Structure formats: C-alpha cells, structure tokens
Amino acid sequence: DLSHGPTLAEIDKARMPYATAQFQAGPNLAGSVAPLDALPVLNPAAPEDVVGTVEPASDADIATALDAATPWGASPAARAETLLRAADLFEADFGKIFAILAREAGKTLPDAVGELREAVDFLRYYASRVGTLTAPARGVFSCISPWNFPLAIFTGQIAAALAAGNAVLAKPAEQTPLIAGFAVELLHRAGVPRAALQLLPGDGARVGGALVSDARVGGVTFTGSTATAQTIRKSMAKHLSPGTPLIAETGGLNAMIVDSTALLEQAVRDVVESAFQSAGQRCSALRCLYVQEDIADAFNAMLFGAISELAMGNPWELPTDCGPLIDAEAHRAISDYIAAARTEGRLLWEQATPSGGYFLSPTAISVPGIGTLGQEVFGPVLHIATFKADQIDAVVDAINATGYGLTFGLHTRIDDRVQQVIERLEVGNIYVNRNQIGAIVGSQPFGGEGLSGTGPKAGGPNYLQRFTQGERIHAP
Ligand code: NAD
Image 1: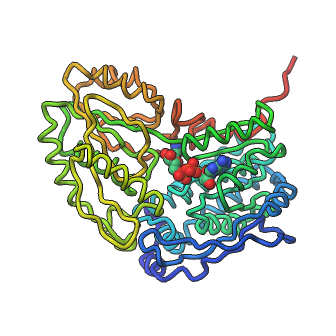
Image 2: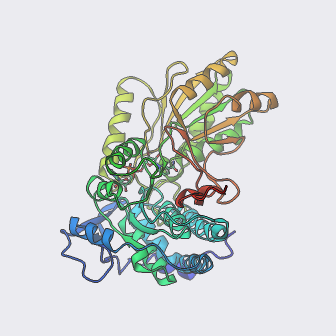
Image 3: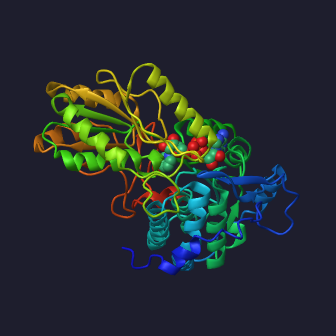
C-alpha cells in the first residue's frame, strides 16, 4: 500500500544532497562531555563522497546516558499515541529518509520504501499492543542494531522497548549512524522524552559492550551476527542476573529446495529475488539452493540468464536492482571468498562488476554433493547443490545439521512433499512456492531458531511481553 508513500516531489527532493547530515551524537542531554574525534560516514556506492560525520559516544557519554536514563512515565494510552505520531512523521519525511538510506547504506528506492513501511508498521503495531501489557517495564533497555536494515530494525527494537514503557539506549551499527540519528530526532519530535530515548553511536565492542554489561540495564535486544550475540551473552553474564532477557535475532545459512515438479519460471524469479535483492545483504537471503539433479542444467541456464539481467549501480537510479556492499571490509572479504572458489574451479556464474564503489556482481558457486555451507556469506553469492529424487530427507537433515534456522524455501507441486519437508525442518520462517524474503508485521512475524535467534518473533503478538517484568504477583 503506497497510498501514504512519497510524492514525486519528495523523491525529487531526496535526490538533493543531504545537507544536514551532521548531528550531535552522545546522550542528547544537556551537559554532554567532549566527544571523541568525529568519524566520516562514507557513501558505499562512491566512497569519496562523505555523507556526514558522527561523533562516537565517549566513555563519559555512556556513563552520563546510563545515569540519565529514565523509564517512560507516560500512561499506556499516551505512549501509544506518541508512537502513532512518530509513524506519521516518518511517512511525512520519506524524501529525506530515502536520501539518507541511499547515500549512507546503498539502499535502492524499493529497498528504502520497504524499510520505511516496516519501520512504520512496527511503530503502529506495537502502539496497538500497548493495551495488552499487564506488567511493568523492565527499566532500561539497550537496543543494538545492524547496518543492513538501519531504519526498520533500529526503529522496531526501540518501538517495542518504548511501547512497554522502558528507557532506551540505542546503539546503531558503525556504518549507519545518520539514519539512526534522524529516526531518533523524529521520535523525540513526536514526544518521546529525551531521557527515555538516547542515541549512543560508536564502536561495537566499546560502546555496545558497555551498554550490555552494565548492571543498570534491565534487558538487551540485539540484531546482528550470531558471533556477536554469543559475545553479548557472555558480557551480560558478568554483571546481570540470569533473568535479564537477551532478545537476539541473528544470522542464517538459508536454504531452498527446488524439485523437478516446480514451475521453473516462477522458481527462477523467486531464487533471484531471494538471493540478490539488497545485494544479498538480508538476513533472510537465500544462501544455498538445492536443485533436483534432472532439472539442474535447464534450471541453471534459465537462472544465469535472469541474473545477467539484473541492473547494478547507483542506488539513486530507479532501474537499479542491486546497489553496493556496505563497506570496504565486506567487499574485500567476499571478493576473497569468491576468488578461493574460482581457484577451486567451483564458480558457476560471474559477470563484470561496475567500478567506483563497493559493488560486487551476483555470483553462483557450486557445492559438492548435498553439502552445506560453513559460514554466512553476507552478499550476492548463491551456492548451488544438486540432489537426487530419493535424497530429499538427506537434504533436510543437512539443513538441520547446520544448527541455523532462519528462513527456508520450497518449490514443489507435490502436496505431500510440503508436509514431509516442513514437519522435520527446524527453521523459523518457511516459504512455499514464493520468494523467501519478507515478513508482515502483525500477521507474519519473523524470527529464527537455533543459532538464528532466541525468539520471540519480532512483530508477533508475544513480542512486547519480553520487554516487561512479566507476571510477578502469585495469587493464593
Ligand atoms: P554485527 O554482529 O557485526 O553488528 C551488529 C551490532 O552489534 C552493531 O551495532 C555492532 O556495533 C554491535 N556489536 C558488535 N560487537 C559488539 C559487542 N561486543 N557488544 C555489543 N554490541 C556489539 O552484525 P552486522 O554486520 O551489523 O549485521 C549483519 C548480521 O546481522 C548478519 O549476520 C545478519 O544475518 C544479521 N541479521 C539478522 C537479522 C534477523 O532478523 N535475524 C536481521 C538483520 C541482520
């Protein structure tokens, strides 16, 4: 539904340079102490373009923020109204939001629209659930977010913690502080008190580490890599009571099975979208495709034809399908990974990459046997394995054995096969005969199992309860 979407004039305005990119970091309260040196925020499509600067929160800023953090005292109805007002402000400022998302995070226009919709849906959905809460807030919540959905996930975490009445200390990813700064500005403008929402940008280990290990923090919500979630769990164990929640949404080795009864044109389209939208920088993205052997040659030929049609380039341009990778480090790591596969003779498809930014063209790599992946490759790299007709169960076992359980796709026209596969799979989000990206706040919440997350699912009916103290009174 784009009825509340940007007008053409707003999109046009968004193409202008983002003039007010600098914002004051730190606790956003009077008396903030001297910041560390400001760091440049670079445009991943053109790294010589400095989008803005960020002043990382100093250790003194963190101490001030922890002292100042005050749970939101407003009534549940007033909290809900404020979050609804924030949702309207987000929608009204889509032009500026797109400008920041494109230049700071390399987001295309469809990606930016998706992010805005999801952020706004989270604000409105959690506002609608405030009345279901019966227990008090936990106090202070630290919200630690990734760069790949720097508006939607950042806002979703904050909206949930605030809806429950907590004070929030928000730590955005190092790469995307500007959109976080703008989202916080809009939330403050909507009426969230400054002591209930403070932004603390900066380094993960130093700033994030301090925010998850302080005894005054009553809960942590984290989205990012599995390894970081494990580090945070250890940091929390040092100081916090075992009852302090860590709500973690993490990575995946997401698989899709395409059997020989699948509708090939549809499956090809869904594979391309699942693996390469957002240049593969989605936690839900398809990483390992299992194609039934007897259709593999025909399927791959169609697939590589479709991949070669994807337009790579400047996220500003409307026809662009794939923007850049987020930064130099990601570009180098994934390029090295592809080079190793090339040396091993496992490259199935690669094509020329635009120069200038951190671009990497969609690539396909073969996986021997019905093997699985050793690591999450967070970019436009699709692994392809083949299986024989009698190996479906073995494929499911291999997927379960990874220990990850975020998304899974199945393309088949055999009804029994759907049951056969999904009953045994330990995966949080299953997509049948469609692409395997996306969730709908409220009706199709999103979350992983095993190494992919702790639950409860974000955007689901039980999510907000985890941000409260739960039921404490035991009646006789
Ligand atoms: P990351 O783990 O490197 O960083 C995430 C956040 O954690 C950042 O803000 C970072 O600064 C912070 N951080 C790093 N070390 C920390 C520490 N020791 N203590 C506290 N905070 C610390 O992840 P990323 O590269 O930003 O994001 C990509 C990852 O996120 C991928 O693995 C992806 O699958 C995952 N992800 C999962 C979901 C989901 O819903 N399951 C959604 C989006 C992204």
